[in-house]
Image (cartoon, rainbow, N blue to C red; front, side, top):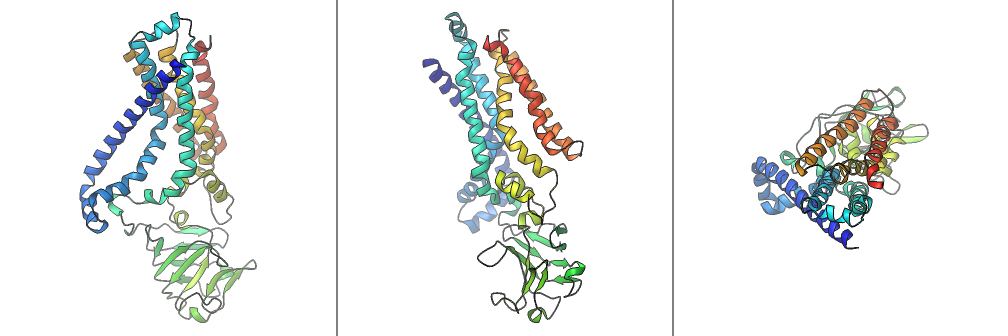
Length: 376
């Protein structure tokens, strides 16, 4: 109908304008703050425009994921306030058009945005998450970052190192502390560097250690096994391993090994569930919380919109500026509720499933109650 197309165009226009405006502010502030780094790297990468496009291109999708609930609410408020400002809302209500009928295209648009955000989270961001591991000070990914010791829970090997390079997936000066059942080579294995390699063919996933210093006779040593499976493979057992190298089997990826938040924040739900089931990983409460939050996020996005719409479309008529002020306050309370519930999970106050679903159990019924006048 005409009202659907009219409100749909108005909300789409508002969404695009607000998104571009906010993204432009972020781009201008961040780009000019780091222009020295971009300019220095542009000499190697073929121009400043190419560097900025490669750096900020993926971040447009990240920005959409981060801001889509707020911009969806803002665009809905704008579309409905536009009707109020030009007295079109009064005319529609006088013509017998119900508030629900007026709100329907706005809710449909918000639902489409929530669905696109979910698809972006599951399908697009996991493919480009490596781009988010490099900031303006580490555009090449070769800056040595601190490396916290981390266990492979299955093999009980403690991975230590001087630092890590995200661009090449390398650990510098690794020193692997071996458990008693794998101490045939000695208490530790040290090398110049370790590079993560995914599983390929008959080769399991693991780390290729180059420039092995300890043990010095690594090329002649037989492989180490635990539980009937090879854990440390030397040149004596595999001809694809060069002299002075060995291969340590591990299902802990490089991102997980260095404790990067990118792998959990930008991985798909399937990958997160696979990580939870990985016996090599020690998973904290943040990963199960993120899995449950993936299911609640679209519903919470819709709850936020339904909390805001009655401020303009409800029977209590308010001025535009009053409605906007109330909407901002309501949005702050909304996100404080969600973030507070997630923070309590980190504090071990309750489980991850409770922390993810509790905001929806509180805010969902509240949104339905606030929107009740529109159904009448």
